Image (cartoon, rainbow over the protein chains, first blue to last red):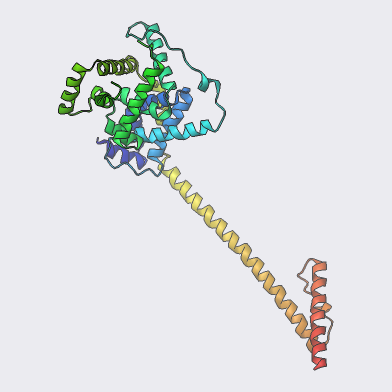
Length: 181
Length: 163
């Protein structure tokens, strides 16, 4: 079924359509929220759930089909993450927020589980050191494979701005992790 | 080298965002510019770090839990809730109107009783205390109103005598 039609049915209260959309997009949105928030699973699940509820029950009528549903959902989720981040900033940072993960000296690909865990920690440390708007473009580009135009739509900025942020994010990572090979 | 014009589009080249003509230009430049070639290698290394990992994924149970948490309320329950909300709002409005109307009518009745007291005292000379409305439960308030009616009546009578 066409995704736009599926969304319309979900908005009318069709639970089968809602479940279908969650199963199609929930995993990807969970990964995006986890990468942007870096928090516990409970927080991440809450944000994804709020995103779907806003899309199904809220007054969001902005989906016009100029972006794919996937890109549009990413944009809705990013707005939720930004709100949560503002809320967190208004409260004292907890120890997990301030924790900086170590970066290994070697980052080559390997099938060894220990190395994979280390690589994951390395990438998490990279993301942690980036300002939120740079972290957004890195995750959308590197993990979600979005084009610059799609990133612009998801973030609500011009395509060129998305490109500039990505360029600066990579430059910042290069300076911060100069010894990373 | 830092001012190399192509450098600012190296990311676009790496991400496949350039047209074929632009790609050819960048590739020709890379052959002659070791600095840009090194820069591109760095971009690839950073991207490579991400490519070796993937974002966290929810378990199937977490996904199903999410799906359950965004289910719509059953139709009957939604209709009932909507009706309940509307009825509650209508009842609250009616109650507020009834209270306001009661207060207004009560005040009007008191004012009419006071006016009747003054007019009757002027016409018959009978003591206004005889007209103190029984409905007024607060004795002190009732006494004040009688005194006020008497004062008004005496004042009016005095003016009539002066004329």
